[in-house]
Length: 440
Image (cartoon, rainbow, N blue to C red; front, side, top):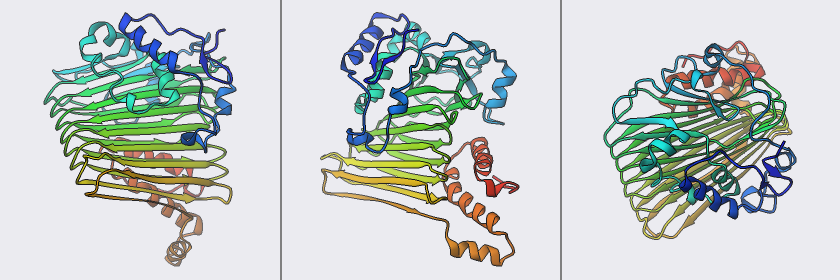
């Protein structure tokens, strides 16, 4: 079967599905620019070895298809979350498992990307690539070149959908390793509001596959968008996700990312605050164990005056896992009165766990307030002693402190069902926490 990439340089050899001419031209431009995947010699990837990815012979579509029912999907979704859901299995849209026709109210378009190419080209064409062009990365170009599957959401001016939208990507244990390239485009008009959850989950542990996802989020003047990325891949899987954001004046975007699964995971968040008075919150948690490698790369560009950004990322690493955080604040020359804060805090639960943190500032304006910093440490022994003096066992005391460290990030999330799910996931990830009862 024809592979997605000739190894090791990552050149495409497989054609995506047919599409309108303007989509084909978009693909071709990126295909020509794509010469290979990053190596350790690339500064942006210096801590992440992609050899396990480039050494895998991926296919675009497996010859084996797993039968799934709505009951299967219900077990994998966020419990108690009332949302319209679009389901993809091994990169393919499954309409019989989806509920995209759920009433989101007038002024809301929610369709697959393929449908949008045919029916809503006038809404898609002005925005496709507008945000992702800020992130000139080989994986983004690869996604551009394979552009086909994904979701298009358009919220008209002043409109607020009646409920959130969940994009559920399910991976099964296929015979051949599948590479999927989801592309989501979210456009929110002036004063509009929407909540979108991207949820990546494995049906079976042990599956080897690649999800190379790009989401473009265009927030108009005064819009409010809350975006979640919940990554729960197989522990042998690879996930590269890019969230490219462009915000108008007074626009507000909250990005919440939680990385729990995957063998090698790269999470890119790339906002451009293009309108005066825009605000962006980038909130994230990565939890590693075993041999997991979780890499986070943030680049927040302040391109207009009086904008505010907040980056709060935390890592909890156990076993032989590796965490990476690279956070850069860029302030353009005309972006006076910028207010930007970046913090990265990491907790190591084993002697073999490691984190590489690189907080960075790039400032071309002179009237700004920018702070950045990173810390890495272990569970506070004095705090453990305090809890033990109150009658708790050492494992329970440590578990409570680790959970409290993570919970600060949960508390910034508005979706209560997501917070409850993450509380349960954290307890499952911490062997010493089994039996704890947490109220969210």
